[in-house]
Each structure stands twice: as C-alpha cells, then as structure tokens.
Length: 284
Image (cartoon, rainbow, N blue to C red; front, side, top):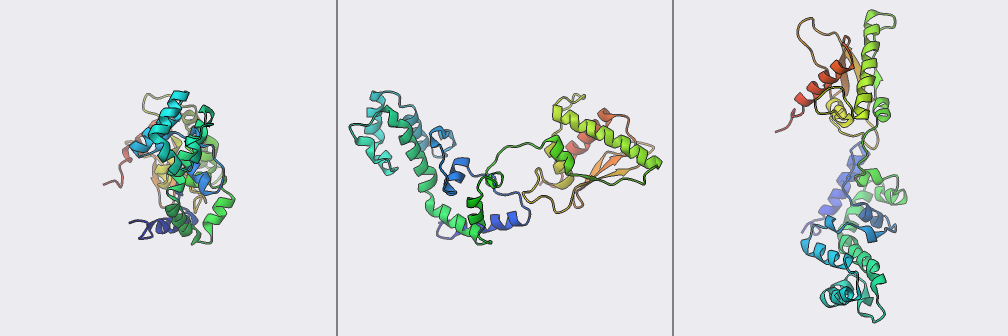
C-alpha cells in the first residue's frame, strides 16, 4: 500500500529537503544496504543476521551461517534449497557444491532480502531524493562523504570539535568583567577536559558533550551543513543571594555562564544541575 501511494518517494523528497535546509539526515540505513544502493560492493559474509526483523528469515540465515559440515550442507539443500534458489543462488543443488560455497550462499540470501526484494521501494525512495536537484545522484557518486548522513556512525563529539563550535562574547578588554570572564572560560575549558577524560571530580552521573549541545542548540549533533549561526558563549553577573545556574537560549544558540565561579568543580555542578533539571523541557 505504501508503494502504491508513493510514500517512499515522498519520504525521499522530505529527507532531501531536510538535509538541504540544515537537517540531520536519515542516519538509519544499514551500512551494507546503503553501499548496495550506491552500486558499491559490500562484504555481506559478515552481515549480522540478528538485524533482520523477520524471525523466519533470521532462522534461515542462521542455518546457513552455522553450516559447517557436508551433512549440514545436505540438510540445508533439503530444507532451504528452493528458497536459496529464489534468492538467486541457483547452484545449491549441484553435485560439486561444497562447504566452501556457504559464505557465497549466505551473501546471496542477505542481498536478496535487504536489497533485491525491496528494489521497487528503494527505486521510489531514490527517485524522491533526486527530485531535489538530483540529490541522490550526487550521494551515490560521493557515497563515502554522505555516510554520516544516511547511516548512524556513532561518532561522539570530541572536545576540540565541540570547542570550535563556539564564539565567545567578551566584555571590553582591561575591565574587571573581562578579567572574571577569562577566569570563567579557564574553568569552562577544564570542565570540557573532565568530560573528555570521563573522570569528573564530582560523584554525579557524568555529562556528555551531546547533552550540553542539546541544552544550548536543541540539537544533539552538528547538522551536516553546520549551524545557521555560530553557537555562542555569554556571561552574566551572579546574584548576591542564592545561586543562579547557567542558562541557554536555543533560539540564539547561546550559553550564559557566570562571571564569578569558585573553580571547575563548582561550574561542573552548576552545569550538571541546569542541564539535568531542564531535560524534560518541552516534552509531553
């Protein structure tokens, strides 16, 4: 029904438009499927059959991958021979077939299930992507560069990448405010070092760069085309009574830090409380 209603084409259009306007990308295609879609060769021998959502196909692929002896191969021919033929491996019933052919059989079965079986959906999806300036043609030509957009590479933010994102709005040089701000930034950099080393000097659950980025921008990762404006760090004067925590404005993508702070541990605690207490903001 989704195919008949051209929903895969619509999905392709929406993703292309999203990426072109600074969106995060799809980040959900299996890397092997993505490579096949880009007409690249992929080593399917090591494909994890646990990723297949269909329990029956999981069982079949497990039987193929666990085939170790001639007796196992003969049993495989009896139980799954016709299905393996449907997957494109026509030599399953040949007399000269041996255990050495099992990886090839497994690859054929995986390719059929994740790619060939769904070729109509894939074609419609890439057609939708191409509706925006032949976007998919560019992706398939430069498929390596587009890996982070279409697959989840699980690459955490590094301290250097995170630091380079921000511009600092200082007070006038030589003033007392500027002196306090420079001291705060020294503690800020030590906080980032604590996060990178994963050894905070406080007993609470550790912070992550992605959490801070979400707190400031509303996004837990840098968009493929970067942010429309550079995130920034500003300063505020602490109140004489009580404790005003660091705060953020996601519209301007700005983080506000106190000008007066005792040390990096205090700043870490303040950030931790501010971020964790705001974690449910906007959720329903």
